[in-house]
Length: 399
Ligand code: PLP
Image (tube, rainbow, N blue to C red):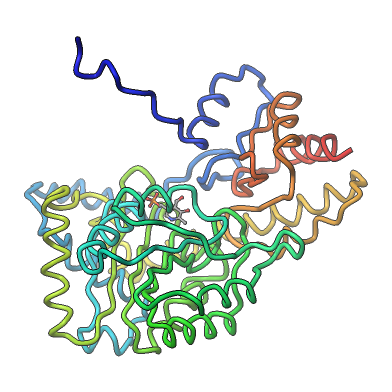
């Protein structure tokens, strides 16, 4: 018999399963709010002008496609570190940080997780309750036991900060704490600057190992403002990990452009850590692909293209905010009992609407409006053409 005869079907990825159902839906009015992708008001994934210009130049230069170094393109890694820590960061000038080009934020998390497993195999990993749906599986597949720390408070629609802090303060030294650096996925609820300072202090007092996941830098307030968590940890003298991604901020999803950055205690230590991280990469995929990182590096190295990118990023941020405002207003016009003003306080692409799994199911069957069963919707999938229809659907299922 076949060597695969006893293989069981793995559970479907809930969000990708939603996309399949959406694609199979023949209603012309259907709307997919389940995805984690930014769309323009025309409902298209944008190709940014700055990216287009950098790609054109690259195509004309027709570079050979030799292997990259294991850690990727040096100019790219430098540009990433400057976005994270700021151009004049002492951590950078003192050589305490290492950055490697990774295959998206996911790839950065996986290389970081594999390296952490070698560094401290007995540690447990703690993720927010709830978290990005891949965090748990990713750290479990690296061999860790994964648990939750309290995060979202459904009653206030904000962060259960007291619960979170108390939990972190009870964890053993060496525990790995995965933190969403900004634009929390799926809730949209972020901590304040002051609360970040408190989390840094707890991590310091308990000897925890922070792993900041920053998939949306620039989607909440701006590039520097959204780096508040990174900057708070940078001042602390702690060692910590950062996964970052240009999937959303450069609209380069399929090019898989991200980075793993690690802050160490000294330049000498950074060299040793880098040598070990390179071993992880070498045995996984050897070295990263060339194109995406080269494009991002070219945009960030050119004053003109960088300005264009920052303007385009601001445009995405502003459109998301406009859609939040419009949704709140349109639901109020439809006289829903509840005040949806909280949607304006949430940050990033997502909103936890508070809709139940039953209500989400009704939106799908009765209206062809697809959302995640937790009530998460992607605000960046709303546009001037579908928003009235979506507001009708939400109002109908709330009645
Ligand atoms: N981390 C979080 C919190 C995310 O929301 C995402 C993407 O949705 C990622 C990581 C992965 O990003 P990438 O697509 O670059 O792998």
